[in-house]
Image (cartoon, rainbow, N blue to C red; front, side, top):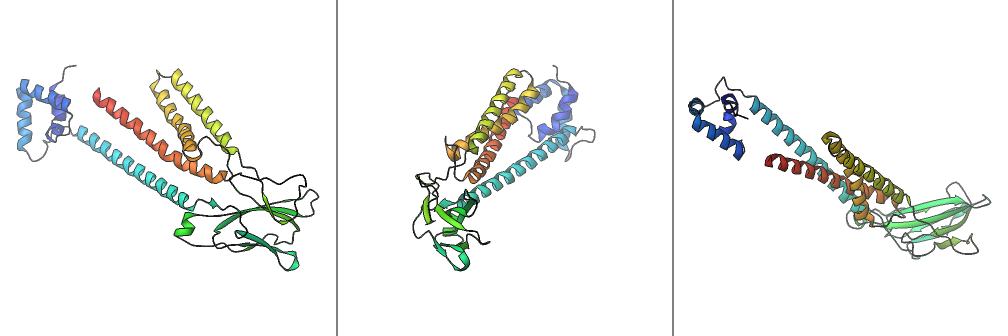
Length: 299
């Protein structure tokens, strides 16, 4: 394609400002050596403090708009990334570190009117209590565990208060303490064992495994669509952005839980996985944009 004088005159302002690529500069200089009219036009532009009135400034406006959009996108991505890092840091500092059972961690005591009181030691900053009725429905069985955290130990010390397990006067048959490492059965710390043939075991939650399977299935479907429509750039690019969502979740799962899908604290683990997946997804998108810009410059 022959480069006309009009094209050269349109990009001369960019040439003077040093905003052209090396190839574009070489094209302008080669044309000016052969075209006396454009050379004179360039010399006139150099003698003016401003751009000639008849110069088409639309390329400048387009570049200015593009630069403004990139600055806004960069600022938004920087803010989002900073927020994600802040949230992940707070989540790490406040993440529960469950305390193995000892006689000091929690004790159960009866007070007046049949109330049962759970008394915690000073190192306990949080607890979980779950209850369910016995088979005959006349009383309740309680399961309890305790934790502390880096935040509570080093930044804001806020011990929990003692709590009444049966504030509405329910009958309490037994209270068990359960460790979240799954190393053994729940420990009876009050009342009688409701299972005479063995102990009681609190099982971990498994729904992280279902979410992982969904992510793998979605990534597989998107991968197949990308292979089928690889010649359709629009469908391929749109599907690729969706593809990296489940991929980011899968990597987040590996970083947080490894190959384990069960958890006693599944809600917190899911939260941590999502917080890990967000910056990974942003990183994937930024990498795609950088690769595209690199390829466009080479062409």
